[in-house]
Image (tube, rainbow, N blue to C red; front, side, top):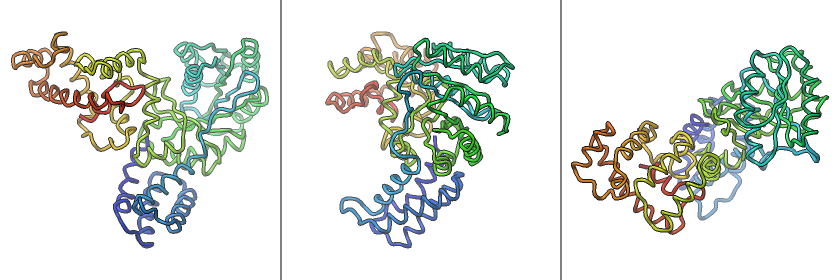
Amino acid sequence: MFDELSEKLDKALGGLRQRGVLTEPMIREGLREVRRVLLEADVNFRVTREFLGRVQERALGEAVVDSVSPGQQIVKIVHDELAHLLGEGTPGIEWASSPPTVVMVVGLQGSGKTTTAGKLAARFLRQGRQPMLAACDLVRPAAVEQLRTLARQVGVPIHEGRAGGDPVSVAKEAYQKAKEAGTSVLIVDTAGRLQIDEAMMDELRRIKAAVSPNEILFVADAMTGQEAVRIAEGFDEALDVTGVILTKMEGDARGGAALSIRGVVGKPIKFVGVGEGLDELDGVDPERLAGRILQRGDVVGLVERAQRTMDLEETEKLQKRVMGKGTFTLEDFLVAIKQVQKMGPLDQLMKLIPGMKNKLPAAGMDPKRMKHVEAIILSMTPEERRRPEILNGSRRARIAKGSGRPVAEVNRLMKQFKEMKKMMKQMKGGRGMPGMPPGMPGMMSR
């Protein structure tokens, strides 16, 4: 997410960050480079101009804090203004005073609207709510079947309409059914088109009038850049949307839509889709998101991902063994590896840990390498995993042959494991991250 924008912004701010003294010409020159980066990332021109105007005004007007270098202070100003650009506070769902809360999901075909409806259901379910899905996209072939499959995967009820039927009637029926069942959230998936047209908007207006949604969430494909902003304006003009969900943020999106859409449309980005899995829909915290753009990490996001994807019972057992007894074996290491693999690609996780972004070579983030490590450990006997100190030359040769990896790789793993055991002793003092396997940051920095 924001990879390209983050890399270029980091370079643009690099010259300012290292300076102990900054003059007005230096600041203006540095911000010109930031302007170029933002425009290349497809950020709206007016949004870019206003953003840089605020940054420059603060950079030239604020007194320099004694304990912070001028360059670092400018980076802090850019962070604050990015957070302001992305929104105020942490936008959430406006819940109805009496259930059900109706969430209407709108957008064009191909934006990931139906999948997002399923992700919302999964998210609400994890929060302890009882969601229901309403299949009101009766235009796109297989749309109802897709939502039915998602409902089954999430484990929530669905009210369906028939292809070619009246979506307004389906929405009304779904609302009545949700009310009678005591359902807390009704998520209405609506029909999209390849482009905005009056027939689609009229249908959406009638559904809105029929169920009086508490939230109208516009789903935008982040990879469409400024086009997503233009489309969002059209939907907002017709429906007065309450928020935006950006999908496909895990792809090579340049970030322009995310930074522009609130500034142009004036509606908050409430969620971002960061993967294809049903649990890969993140809430938006402007402060944290700005930190990730500026490569300052997001520990809270890392912990949330860990708690969402890991086996917490297994993790707690591992933490008790390591923190309590002070032991860390290759069996524990294998458990930790499997837990980390559930969280997603290593390169994504690294970006969430402050200061870790540039500490792992690209080769170290290859998911195949994790599989190789797993194969080596699985080729050991239970005794060897518990007591790696008994691994002599002949045993290591046997393990290498069994795992299909060179002996040098086995030796490298054992060296890294020895270093990690030292780190475990430090973590025993309470410096680990809650909700994650012990040694996870160290594992990813090897």
